[in-house]
Each structure stands twice: as structure tokens, then as C-alpha cells.
Amino acid sequence: MKMWRALLFATVAVGIGASSPTYAQVKNVVPVTKQQQAQKDQQERLQAVTRRGRLANYQQLLGTGNVRVASSASASDAASRDTAIDLAALGFTAADVQTYKKLNIDLFDIAHRFFGGTTSSSEAMLMADTIVIATAGDAQQERSRIDGFLAEIPFTVGKTLKGSRVPGDVVRIPRNSGPLPNGNYQKDFTDIDFVPGKKYLLVLSKNWYEQFVTLTNKQSESSFTALPHDAYEIADDGLLLRRSHSMQVGVNPKDIKSVEADLKSLSKRKNKVGGLQ
Image (tube, rainbow, N blue to C red; front, side, top):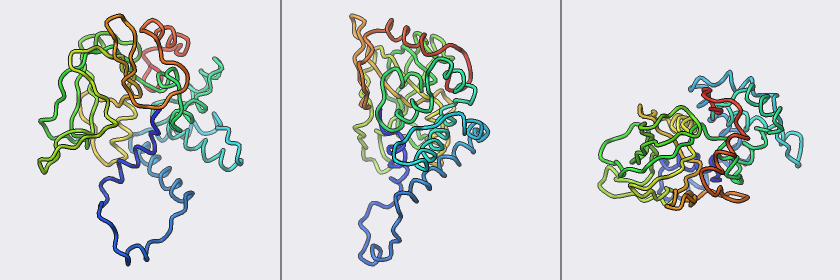
């Protein structure tokens, strides 16, 4: 799985001037410790959760789980607070944590691995709020956007495996690649290369898109837009070909039936607003 926090804050920092600082500027820079930066990042993410109306979810999540960090108790507490913020951002609640505990599934442990950059396909699906089989359309990059992205790819839903989309709905994946105001074209190699007309299994999070946009001080598009955790092209023989660039452990799902079986074992409640749908 991508290191989502690192990617997010790298994107936020893009707006800061790219020119090299002068010697005087370097001399006057006040060193920021790793701990200070982590606290700053945590506070900014919590503020974004608050602006999205999820502060109560975060507060209720505190104490319902604990991330096991070997280094120290304080490091474990900090990691647990981080994970509570991330779970609230993804739409999970304290009730979800308790429900999964009864299934011997630790949401705190899974979310910590997911945002740390090492996860499995099953865990990425658990962290998603929308999973659909959909057909890719042509990239759309003609209009100005309010979410900070440069373009999007629309997908027409054929079947929903998780979430509230119905056949015929359009879901949109935003892209960092696209035309810039100065006429140049920006290519972001982390964008997934989707082929118009092909079918994909899309593991998406609208919640994470909204968190990302809020944190970058932009506004969400009115259409159903979501960021991909994973994406698989569906081959003619039904096999799944992974097209996302995120890191994973374990094996990829073989086909749609194996995904459906995986989801059945993970999700016991459907059509719920939040991380579990």
C-alpha cells in the first residue's frame, strides 16, 4: 500500500516555493525535530477531521484500540492517536471497532499497517468504503476543478461489491496528471494507467478523497469522486491483473469470486454510512 500520509503531506508541500534557499535563509532556519513535525502533521490531520464533522468519531475511537509499538509506551500512544485519526477520516466509528473485535479483526492494527505502507489486498478492501466493477471512460481534463487535481477518469458502474453505488452510476478517480495553467502538461507517474473501455475492479475511498481535499484546503467536487486504494484490470478470462502501484504483502486476489468471498468474511454489515458499507 502507498504510504498515504507521506504522499499526502508531500502533495501539500508542493505549493511551497521550489527555488533553492539562499545561504542566509539556510542559516536562519530553525531546526524542526522529527517529533515536532509528527505532532504538527497529526494536528493538521485532526483539524481536517474536525472540519469534516468527524471529531466526535475520533474522540469515541480513542481508547477502543491500541497500536502495539515495541519501542516505548509513549510511541504506542502516539501511534494509537494517529490511527484513531485515520480511522475517523475513513469513516469508521467506535462501534465498528467493537464489531470487528468480535470477529477477531483488529481495525487499529490493520489501519496502522495500511497507512504505514505495508498491507494486503484484503486489508485495503476493508479500509475502502466503495468497491465496484466498472468500465473506464476517457480522461476528462477540460474544465477547472475545485479539489486541486488536474483531471479525472469517469467509470460507469456495472456491479457494486461494497458501498451504495448502483449499476449505471458514474464514479470518478481524480488525477495529478493533466494540463497546467501555464499550458504545460504535468505527468505524475503514481497515477494508475487506465485504458478507456476496459473493465476494472476498483477499491476506492470517497472518505479519504474528502480528507485529502480538506487537508489541502480545497473543496470536494460535487460528483462521486474517490481515491483508489487498489485497482485491478479484469482480463477476458476473468482473472484480475493488478494495475495500482501500492505496496502489498501476500497474494493478489485471483478473480471476482475470490474477492466476493473475501468481502463476505470481512464485512457483516451492509449499506452503512462510514468505513463499513
